[in-house]
Image 1 (tube, helix red, strand yellow):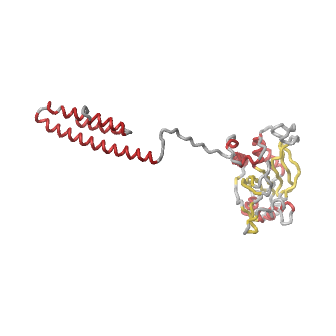
Image 2: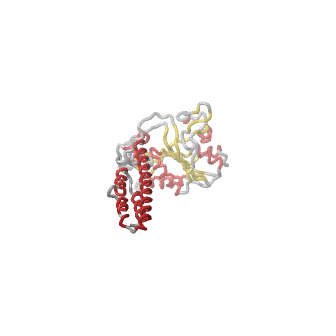
Image 3: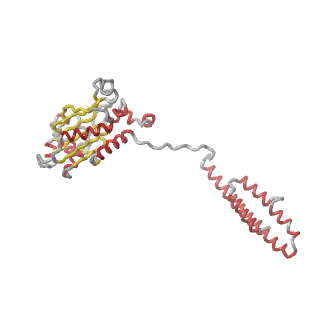
Length: 337
């Protein structure tokens, strides 16, 4: 028999051993009373005299090598078994599947809206949630004595009298116009804070998207065209849109923008209060006083601005009747989107 071939076979067999029981079977196979080593030893007397000594030494060397390999493999298996016992790991237990993450519906709507405006040439910019009083109010034509400040003049930082949590994303409009010259076309998504009592349609924190465009000869009709593209992209090509006169300190003229009810198609239902219309955002032409505050020469530029609550857009689009559902972290709700 070829001793080298036998040693190669032993080494191959050892690589397949994964338990102490299998190792014992291999020990019996090679070292048992009827094992291969015993068979090799018993064949020595049948060899010619000059070959007996050489072959005997080879068999002894093979036996010693095998004993060493078996001892080393046994030590490895015992060590591995000890680690498994210490870790209390039951390798027979089925695995626990890891759930994939999911994009929150509010984030989905923000991304959708920003993508729509980005395709129309608007850049997406951000700004700090802690704002100066000037950027949040005065720079937007809302002086200290203005009555509209009463509803938002809150959430000031305790040790910084002129800093507060922003009540809208419009301060970024002031920040951008103070550092850049037209043409400008921006949308600004982000969180805002207001002292609203929490109910099915109000929260003290929600998300808003401000948009504005400034250049020479910008007209109200440009605003209408931009918002019509936006509305139909979000709610479908079959909706109708209307403007209603309104008041905002930082725009003149100002409007509220409605779309025909996506539930009843304008016929009147409980969602739209039997009116057939749903309010989606406020807009208007940027007030000359805002341009004055940021240092733009009077009469040179015109522009428009609009603002919308992201939660409101999501509620209208998906037929959700309670804004609090977005923030309760109920996976049964969130997995629907």
